[in-house]
Image 1 (tube, rainbow, N blue to C red):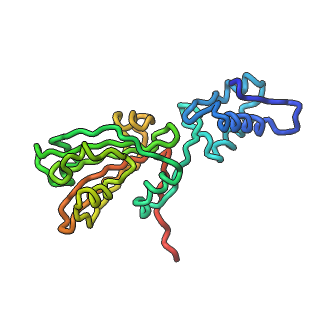
Image 2: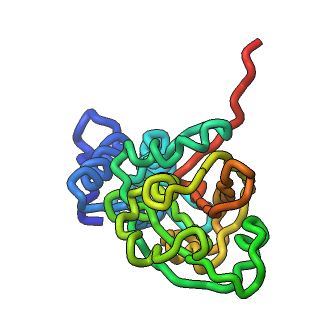
Image 3: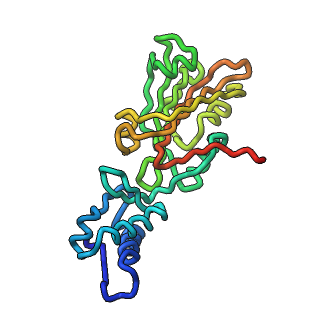
Length: 246
């Protein structure tokens, strides 16, 4: 707690001094995203102040979206901005995150012959080969969302040899490199608790709530071409329904 500073002779309220010292520690990268802050009790004991003062300081920082308080777990630094959008605008989510400076990192490319979820969306038969690709989107050093893609080998031959830029969209790849007649897309949405494998990739708590979008892209005859599942932890994305104008 060396970064905390209180001057009891100052006219500045102590809660503001605490908030300022934490704010400076964050801006100077002494504290980083997901670092745990001292408990209210620890700060009270160190400086001989009341619990109410600490709660005031943390309340100020929480209102500035610099910290998150999780009941029963503690208080954490949250330097990654939370995107706010409506459900109807979800197609622009990648662009909104990209505007923050998020870049995509390729995690895995493999050939599979079965995938319960994706194969049902793509109408593939068990044993029919497809590429499975996983990506994570990184803000500074923090994963903020991830994507899982399934692309049939019959539509995307030699994909493992040409798919080298994770920031190049699959839609552009399908049109530009494979000349596929991409024309339609359908989308499902659900709010789910993350599986352990996904939470590890995103470096968040297991079973944390996340928005999951499943998208199927089709040709002019509505034949499925590829499938993408995008997962956004609730701590980095807030979705709302668009209010109809009266």
